[in-house]
Image (cartoon, rainbow, N blue to C red; front, side, top):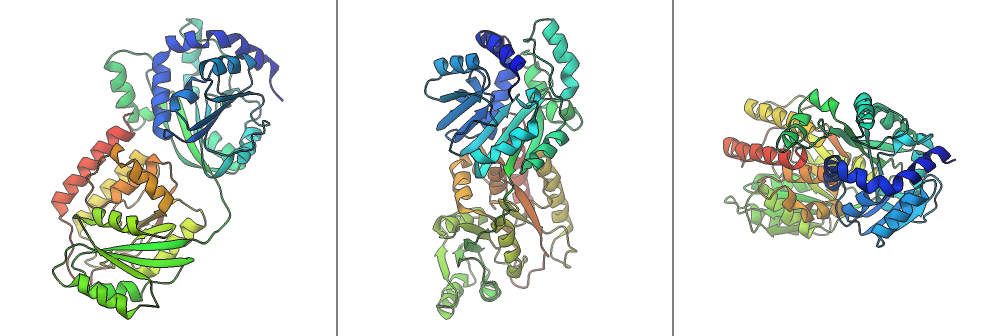
Length: 468
């Protein structure tokens, strides 16, 4: 049941909305920048509580539909943006007969009398990959917002529900969704050149200070309980790993509707390529083995080469040194096939490490990047540099398409994939693995050189993720 008082309020505000928006342009600019980071251009987008349509139009969807309770608001939106579709009514009851990539509820939940009813109704407009994006005011700002209304700095609004992040997460859980990530933005809603940018771009991201952010946001996904079966491509980058090729093939369990092992050989000096050729002939008819010589350099380049050849719906990386056991790959498959996550990352730092498997300084480096990435991506990560990573091919293709956003200088490919997965709002889940010492060959990692490159990538990503 729609609230008639709210409808009357928004009908009266419709003609003034653009003037208030112009007066508070800085707040809306920061909100739009955040939404453009979360919602890629060219997706199908449904906005509930779309007002006069500015946010939906500025996101530039391939198809955009806005629903609002106010007839006047919808009329203004239709006049301004006739290329999008606008509807009047109760968002929990409007029947659209289609599903969307993104559903946006921006500054809406505070006005709702029955939030869980709306969340429960969202299933009808969601496919298994839909992302729900919610923004709402931080309740500690209520006295300041009331003061701003009294001073006529912002429009006077009806009393709202003041919800914490935990309240929203609980209501989403009741509606059949789980939170992928959340955060806060903006601690100074007025524009003062340089000063506002410093506070809202840098200071707001600091521990404790971030709790003061005016704009709270949540990205959630539908919880799927269906387990499907998929085809799988396991990419094995191999340079000077001749002694591990047979083990990678022999020890690989069979899983998925179709499985292929793709070796990408990177200019070895120990006969690795010839060993791959020999093993492929030996296992012909029993194992589906494909192989190719690498054009470029580095593991990251090898992984991209292998992924470009892959026929499977699920892509996996297995390091040829076999420090992560091939026998563990079915765990990764089960996690992604049952929708426990959409990007499955190995974690070597849960179980006890074998002697000589990881040097002390490498452990410290891994722990540093773990803390940095948990803060950067808004999802907990314990081991960013484990080579075993699993994702759907369709998601990898989106990551590859948007690679320029973060730059293209990761020698291993781990950060490249993690950054891309976070940008796509994929649910990242970690699988603990037992990390073993090498039994053949030597590591190709140059600790200081590559560590410096990874640190630069982290700092660069900080500007692209946090300082938006």
